[in-house]
Image (cartoon, rainbow, N blue to C red; front, side):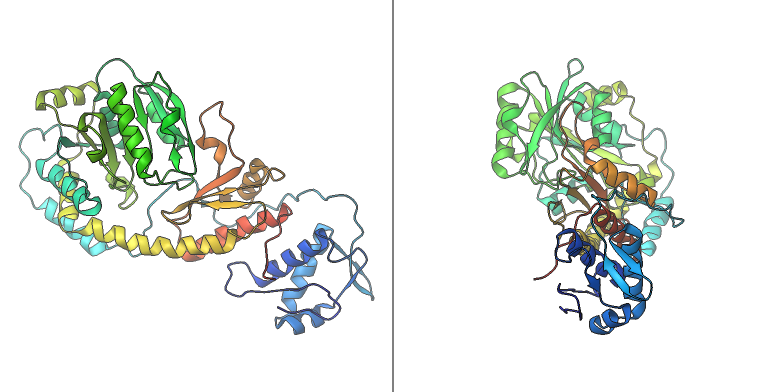
Length: 459
């Protein structure tokens, strides 16, 4: 912490932050002007003096002053120096110039390719290709070896014992959801979906029945607010998107109680082939799940599964026919079997957990210190939500970020139509390398600065 000569506010520059030093300096001077710590008409130190006291190059101070000058916070007097401008009302947020840098898309959750075990991946596909060709149509429910490998994976990673359930392999998440919802039988159901939830999940469920919102709070879905008319309840207990909530045990038990008393079905989608708990808390006939490995393996694999209450094989065949489920390619099924049995998938999950931990720390460091905001979901997974003060509309932040070629989502997109959304943005970052992530969070931080949100600094 230093007090430059002629400057009665503390300036702290941290070279470990992703923001360049000139951006840190401009943000702190801007905040001091906004909050009156630097009075209108006050003369600022020369760039040479400021740089010497802060231990930076003169270019850092010069760039910071130039930015404040462009924003109208300071003015220059030829031969006299730089002065804090007289207030003329709150200046509008500047429309940034269009960036020519490659766009960074933070809207879709994609797996990281960092450290991907390419040799093991190729070996699994080579072994799958060396198998004798499968004669006739593959089993409609998936190869028995793959179904067993998925069951063993769920048991080993989450202690999920599938007594009373079967694993059914599908060619995509939409087919798995359709199977799970149709497992209860009957006409098109009324589905209560945890709100907020991923937009794609709401869209897929809307193809299968009528979707109603199930309000959620800081502990996830509210079982006490399940609509009376619903047949299926869909929850995200392990890591509710976009807030990263985790459903506590008592709420899982309440969901199981609802299913027992109403005859309804509880459906839990998972996107990494893992689940928070399992059917042990309720009757196996009232609990179903869908999963995929898209958060761990390349999305092109396009292979998902449903964990359904055990039924006669003939009924499963009829269900698959009713939803027109596609049969995954045999080679893909064989390769995924190899990847599961060899421990590749489990090891990759552990590797990504370490990689994502470092990225979450970077996001918290860059975006977790703005007054009036709240950063959620950065203690697990690879996504986050940033709640904004009412004076900073999420729509404006998203628009300015898009102009700077960083794409994020508004929280409004995660809420059921007609629900009042929270003011904020959501973004995924697991797929970014360190350099790109630093550029992305730096751009978000700069945009918050442009909305007059001053980052907290050490006292």
